[in-house]
Length: 123
Length: 414
Image 1 (cartoon, helix red, strand yellow):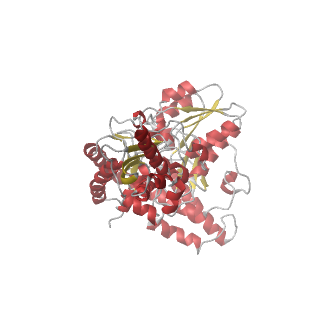
Image 2: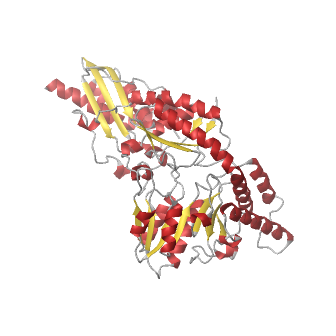
Image 3: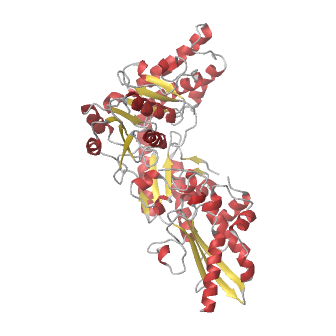
């Protein structure tokens, strides 16, 4: 039911964990639906230097979280904001239809983390 | 890699002895049991032998009380709707429990749409409803009580005998779905005191696509399917002869094996329960600790999600199942787990392990070695932990309303 790419990211998730004293934190989801994603960022000169995730969720939720960290790493804030849930799913060679809405929130978590970073910058 | 099948409540392999019996009725004895000639008579003989095997296994006093069906779900539909329609002139009230299989619950839901009124009894924390609850729910319009014998998700055995005493006293027809209990624990329709009972072939090393309904003589019932005269017009349609033969053989073998299997598997069950609770913190045993199927173990592991756990165990060759939303094809976690009072969050971390006749002590030890590191790994990956309420965190956009359910392509209503 999952693509090889999804299984690869599920089995060997990239960038698992939490950055200490992060520049930005984003968390989306809902425990009652069974998916929560938390992303922490370290940003230097407008570039994402480090990104880590923690996820409570199914195989697709773990894989999309891992993929979004891989996609965002090294990108500028503007570039990272271009990443969408759809592009994450595409990079994973698709997700089962039932998972497209429920477990595909990783780009939202990234966006929330970036917004948190920007808010702190402006504060 | 070691392969361990621990999902016998989902389905079982067909016993080679069962398959052997069946084969003859696919090729050599292919006749239609309704035919008069020798081909037909051979098939008829086989169907009637299977009927006797089922009747004997569940202690039915007459073979005429057994009707073969296509599945357990079909048998449940026949039992529940057949009684409801036939007794409508007496009343429109049905009593069931919140932990029934979907075959029963959704059948009751449909009857509700058709004007029946349904009381769904809430179970206790172990998934049991009491005879007293049933007695209190009875009205002068009650025509049917349907309560399962053993629960598929949490293994809890219901006090069917006590409930049937209430039903009998108030002269109300009583049905039990015994799909999970037949072949695993003692099932006798007279001792249980039920008027209808349903069972299925593929849970007891028989083939898929065959089930049976027991209906006590004198029970007021109408057919819900119409056609030829097969199965005394209770279930028209040419008999699935090979399937029926398989069910007959399977139920006979299961009954013979039952006590030895139950003794061995309940030891494994109790070892798994005590070891897992000892080794893995934040673990909840679901279902009754004692009054449960001998082959059935079920837990909820907090802070992790069931599908991830299932996939990781699968990669280690262990097949189990979970009641998490992601494994059910719907977006909601198991209705059984929420009915016994678990939060949705906890219900998402459920695991069900159901053993069978071919499982060994080595399988059990392999599971006990394999599970803890998987749980540990998933917990390390999870943003949830004890004392951490994700919704209280200032940067969190977690929201209580369901952000995606309105897009859900799958409709599931419980």
